[in-house]
Amino acid sequence: DQQVKQNSPSLSVQEGRISILNCDYTNSMFDYFLWYKKYPAEGPTFLISISSIKDKNEDGRFTVFLNKSAKHLSLHIVPSQPGDSAVYFCAAGGGGSEKLVFGKGTKLTVNP
Amino acid sequence: DAGITQSPRHKVTETGTPVTLRCHQTENHRYMYWYRQDPGHGLRLIHYSYGVKDTDKGEVSDGYSVSRSKTEDFLLTLESATSSQTSVYFCAISGARETQYFGPGTRLLVL
Image (tube, each protein chain N blue to C red):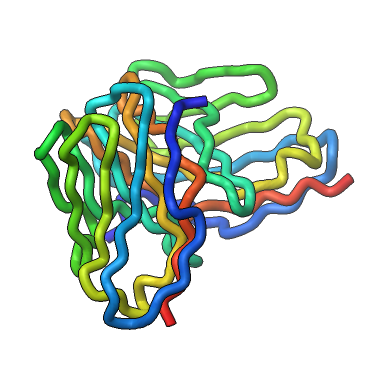
């Protein structure tokens, strides 16, 4: 039973355009959500997070949107750059637990 | 970057042999985690620790054990390695508000 789902295994966009990565969750106890970026042969790196008390958090080119009623979050990258090509993992936590649950990842390719 | 190192970075071993992977942190964080990453499965939690000598199982703990005798070190042991344990293993530590920071990974091949 997947509690965090990233339904698109891959996404391809043109440089300069917007990249939108999606994530759905099922556990209403989750109150903290994170996005990680992973390059090949490296560990995942923390990108951006959002608490359930917010519906948007922005950091430079990266914005995360949270729709609690739909149990859906998305990561927007504007403008996309070739260096953004990586696997992006969505993660969720909360409910008093120090554990995170990760999605399976979406591989983003930004074409020059 | 969080001060996390993993050793070894690469290892090839044979089925049936014990293997120990080490995670070392310099951040004095309370929580440490071991994950494995496999194609089509994302990151799955093996075990985690919430303090010295305090550990608990994760989603895929069968065939693995852990120990934490010091705050800075978290060891993952494959008691008798199997080919299904061929994977990339990541250690993570927990900073503020559940944000976890990951090490560089250990690539393990079990022949």
